[in-house]
Length: 423
Ligand code: AMP
Ligand code: GLY
Image (tube, rainbow, N blue to C red; front, side, top):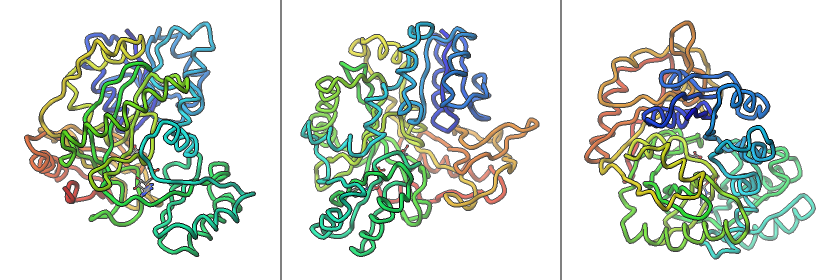
């Protein structure tokens, strides 16, 4: 079959790399793609939210499956768009419908879902401009640090954690009254601070059945020792060494099962990936957030460990037979280190030539913010390239990634040299 992947990051290059290995995939397209996807697929210069152009492409190239990488088109209803159009309703769209994508699109929706289904999460209340005074009063009942979350999508910047009560109140004013995050902060969720170590769990579902993929841990801060500003992710490791079988069973029983049951009970049509952001508090898992897609850079360590034919799995997801699949996972650890543009996550320059990629041995360079320009690979974003390696241990894998990074260069290249330091 012909398949289209939507997106242009390291996650989408990893999907393309994996799907291109499937004998079931005839032609593979990526929109808009990057220099990495160009190696294994045909890039088409269409934005992920341009549904009309996507439809035209699907019809022109006889595409029968669309794999949606980022959350934006899902929250904007791309799955519903396909189902509501006679010409393309037969196409398998991997990703939830708009109503279910609200699990990522609205923090309040996600919290209400978790409360309704007794899924362990931080206590919370939500507020609007009209109830800002109640918000101040609620903050006074909490202990520091204070966690404030813009309800809507805010490009990963909508969560603010503050130690000082007065600062937290001022931030609440900025979010609700001064619309700091625009429409995204029309509502703000204030929640109890959870103290623990984070990890991510990835679940596949056809709406009825589910399968759990390996866990991963990503490194969100720009600076070594988990310091400095939050980024989209600076590196990742899979599996997570502290996720013992006992802990994984707790995740499945207390979180994964009630989540999938909750989709059914609430009539949330869900075919796709569920990314559950977790925090280990004491010995217990609690949910920090749901995302309705795979993580980036977690995908760069999770998919390389999947031994199955991914297209076969995606087919069973779209036709409701995921229960017939046995997920086969590579025992080895996988790690990835993200190379970023100097200055990221603040202002940075683009268009820098990346050299040395062809010298990489025994690691896989997944391109992210990198495009082809006159036959050269040049930077086009903050996160530029994720260098993934396998190893019998994560220490061995990470060493390979760092050895290969020595061969790579672009002006003002930056990366964290301590991925895995805390494990
Ligand atoms: P989110 O966008 O909801 O994943 O939040 C971004 C980051 O903020 C998370 O990855 C955590 O590091 C942190 N965070 C969110 N909620 C909490 C909480 N209730 N307690 C502690 N940290 C949190
Ligand atoms: N790595 C975190 C995310 O994809 O949201």
